[in-house]
Image 1 (cartoon, one colour):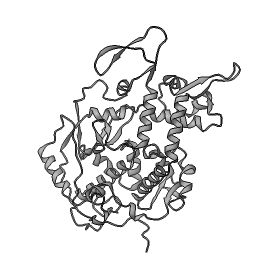
Image 2: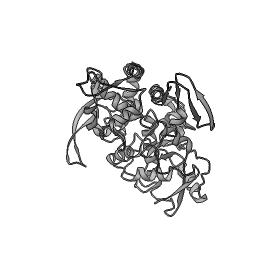
Image 3: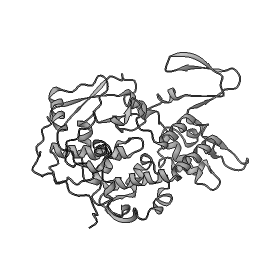
Image 4: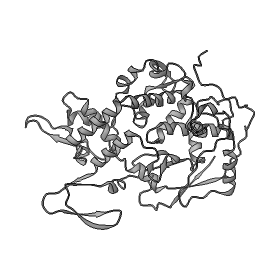
Length: 418
């Protein structure tokens, strides 16, 4: 008989139902400059690509500036700048022009940006990428009990999952054996909303990254309910109270419950239930091509899944597994083990394309006449730039907004646990 939903965890609901974490314990939250760099180097990238999608969707591959201004909030553009100034900020990506004196200003992609777009479209169109992204999306739906998610929640993760901007028509319609669009009741809004549903449970996909690593890819030897320890990495200057470290060690020895199993029968405040919540959050981040996403996306999904504030507690209790960066006007949850310093351990082709967009965004055009003297922010030395253009990646890594701006990277924030 075909299994239509994830199975209930076989672990007894009477096991590990106590909460042993010290309510008055405090975790010293230390900034990680490497992961902050990984987040801040992508400043404005999502907005640039959203504007690009609007432009290339037009039959003329150009749009009047007046038509984009009303979309400023929808595209999440900075509130302190106009749409026109945002385009002017990245002249290597966008070109403004006026077809004739009587017509309004329009914007189009530069030839280089258009070339990158065509290369990215080729990635989205490749069978390997399409099969991979379909499996990631299926696994995301399998984290839910109903195998359904409202489209507005999936849209929150669209960029991080590596979905094409028009994924419903360009991707999902080609996989009717996987997905279907349906209507569900949105409990928060008390109205019907469109959702994406996984047609049937995919047992072959119900293996988490933690489980795959534990059996080294040999799924025949995979045993459920074993003790699997999460990888933990701490930045320099981080320290835990001994009693908290002792609790973490005992917590790591608890059985691992797959995120593709249903463990809501466990007491929400128990240590075992927390390890399951961490497993779900860990798997969610691993499904994303950048292994990070905005904190609000995590909490929105957690509320829909029924975790309430348990994701928030998981982030607070386990800074060795997850890191929260406050760069680029938001808070971003990063999976620590996926990064070595500020670079991804496993590089996805889409991330390679995004870095090429960043390269283009932060090119500094050569000024005519005398070469401009430029300060290298890494070495603090002055050098002349007389090439056609320079890549300011070091500069872009520092172009970030943060509530911690001006603080030392070793300054800590204490967060009360409870």
